[in-house]
Image (cartoon, rainbow, N blue to C red; front, side):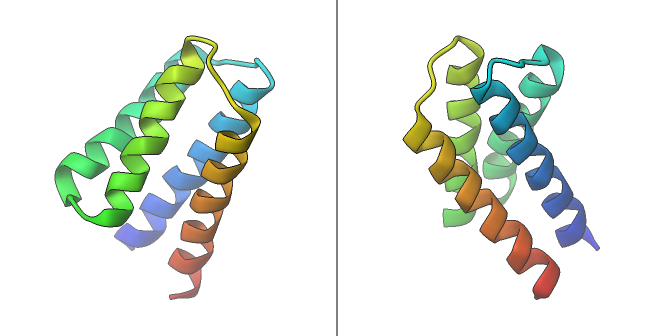
Length: 89
């Protein structure tokens, strides 16, 4: 159950990445999702959570207008594969 809830928030993170990349930035949800990813690393402290923290830091950079197509696609692919594995496993 917890895995599926975390996968839902990962999906929300994918939407925030895509919206921010196209400069449609809902600021409060974006800060919330970035905080979620960074907090998840603090709680779990494993490799996947470290990569989540990097996605969270990248979202913070996107708040300030610093984005890269390569990093956005890479982050989305990482989160989408986590979502797929969460619902299949």
